[in-house]
Amino acid sequence: MTPEEIKSLIDMAHSGDVSAQIELAARYATGDEIQQDYRKAVNWYKEAAKTNDPEATYNLGLMYLFGEGVKKDQARALTLLKSAAELGSHDANILLGDAYAEGNLGLQQCSILAATHYLAACPIGASRSIRCLGKLLLDNRITATELGNIMSSDASWPA
Image 1 (cartoon, one colour):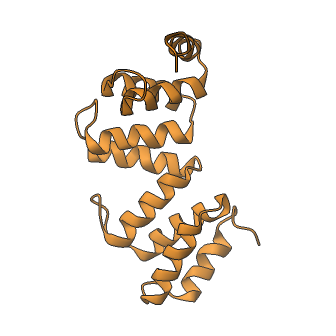
Image 2 (cartoon, rainbow, N blue to C red):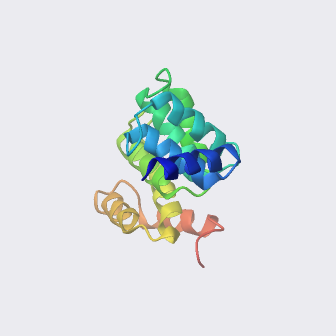
């Protein structure tokens, strides 16, 4: 990006363009063609997350999870990640599915909740979700009946 394009992106972000806010936050977080600044990344993700954007909410959750630009706060991170999952974030659903499957991130291991999150990611086209569900079934951590019950209770799952 040229300096003019960066300035334009910043102007668009200031004007409330959520896509620009997310792109600018990601560039600050990674240092991609701009000076890395985690605090600015957090601020722009917060702005975009105010609009209930799932990507911004997920990435803000990661910033809290890893303590980048903010004090590390696992409880706040989980709140944001769960919110992002509810908003339809594929990545948040996969991360939470993994966390419930393994009992990570301070969450108690629960194969039913893992499967629920993996299923939530499936309609988005997540082949990884299908593999993770298969592993839960093959490892006898969830039964086919339990999986069927989850699928029948999920309004977003195709009948």
